[in-house]
Length: 376
Image: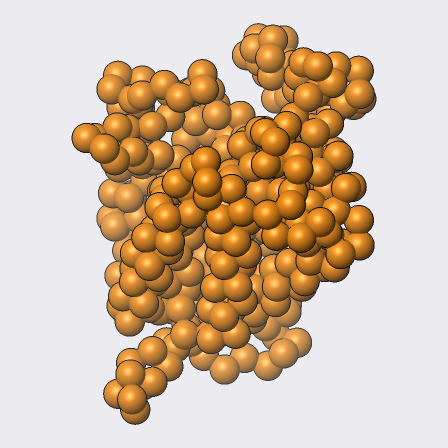
């Protein structure tokens, strides 16, 4: 027992326990409809495999990731996999974003998100002092822009937004000036205008217009958002109870196991359950930032912060679209939504963070906060 505790002493068990509860919450929601699907059984297997990967990753010394060659190989592999989708990828619901090998499917965009965080952590950690130079924003944006474009053209609008938001968040915490922040904002507006005029497909424009007023097309592009809002609202204070979520069980709410698992959970558990869910995510995110602040070098600090930004962005967009505040983009809820690709990568990334925690340093509270915010 002592050897076990010593081997995994770097693991934050409060984070781990909170995540296990989140996984169980997703499993309970899926199990409510086990009579018609096999999502629950598959997700249980995926959880045990993912948790095993998490434990293995937590005992590895990840300092080799600081090497430029290693990071560039991982980035190049992500680009190659995403590009290969256009040749041998499988089409699912209009998006060519999956590899199908026998009875297994794999979505490389989840691994690409992790590669983006590693690349940005390496890039900004080497230029921490001179990050105020705008060329570093442009160069880092070009690196991420390649992956963004490959994902967007699948088309996977939701993941593309996540990748852009992760880049923007890491640029901000790296010490960008207010002047350059304004430049990034203007660039974002111009990019959106270009995408709207030349890239966005009609159904994507319809989703954005539905965001402004979802009730204008509840039988068309606004149907999913409308049914999700109904499901969340019908849960009231204490929910309808496990297995009694009518919107999901009667299939009014589509993709309840992935894109709308928050709405399905809220319908059964109500406002009280949602508060517990948000508290758990808050615990996970704050303690991840605490681990990041103790990173041995800027690379570890930036990786932990970037990973937190990634998870927070996923959760914010997912919950926002489930309650009708954001357009439906098809994003999963970390550790709760069904799916092997994202669950495996989430636990792998968390395991890497725990492995980095093994050689972390003690930092004064005020200095840790300043390092995360990029204050010199």
